[in-house]
Amino acid sequence: MSDDGQQHTGHERVPSRQRRRFPGISSRAYEHPADRSALVALRKLSGFDTVFKALSGLLPERSLRLLFLSDSVRVSERQFQHLHDMLLDACYILDLEKVPPMYVNQDPQPNAMCIGLDEPIIVVTTGLVELLDEEEMRAVVGHEVGHALSGHSVYRTILLFLTTLALRVAWIPLGNLAVMALVTALREWFRKSELSADRAGLLVGQDVRASMRGLMKIAGGNHLHEMNVDAFLEQAEEYESGGDLRDSVLKILNVLPRSHPFATIRAAELKKWAESRDFQRIMDGHYPRRAEDKDTSVSDSFRETAASYASDVKTSKDPLMKLVTDLAGGAGDLGGRVRRGFDGFRSPPPAKGGPADAPQEG
Image (cartoon, rainbow, N blue to C red; front, side, top):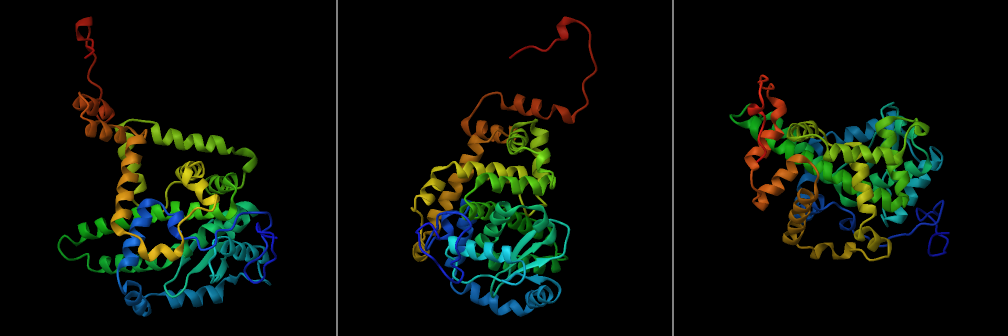
């Protein structure tokens, strides 16, 4: 029985436990503001999808489909049935009418992805299947179905194509700078789209501890008895607030080449969203519908994104973000604070004797 007490057939499969369903839900309900504004803008471009789908012959998509069909195991009622049930259940919860094909690929590295232009394909590795328990895996399947519902597979494939094309013309003067700017922007969006899909996974699984356990296992392996979710979240807090301006710069450099946020950060972001009013409103049945997507304002979406980034900077405990907030607020002695923040980059001055050389408090 579903939460409305009725039996369903087809991909409207009975969940393994009672959970809420979201008929007609728009992906805007769970998308991170930065992800949502980019998608709203792309959807407003008339013919955008049609043009690039026509170029699908230039992409290795057909080859990938044949590769997975020939060298992976397709999830169905006869193969990996528990994953098949999870997939049907996730599509039922998020009201995704067309169930994407799903494959299990032999790879010890825990991973999952949703790709494709004509239609999304979900691929999970054996490393992930063997690592996660049922509820953790349910969140991952919901994560990938969230990618499909948002259209991330289409836009990601398009943007990856554009990135590859740009790399081919990198020999043009200043081409490398242009390519790096494009790649950096794309990766920033990719990271935000992952946060969106994490939220979709939570809407499907409706078990925040299971979602965070899954992220913890991806970071630390299948030694759950040796790990603790609360301690894992404390790592995110330490990462966010610890260190000085040198560490802030190193954090930026570490994250720039990544398409996914760090696992601890994803867990902390998901916990924060699970405790938010936005999440509770969705669970209460108050959420944007797909039928309203065409009326969504691009300018309103970008304003929400700007407000979200401003809020992140204002509330961040990162030393660099605190400095930016102080700059915006006109705080005094910023020069001194910057010098102190970067003192570690310089060699310590030679020691001098005498109290007259002791530093003076300002």
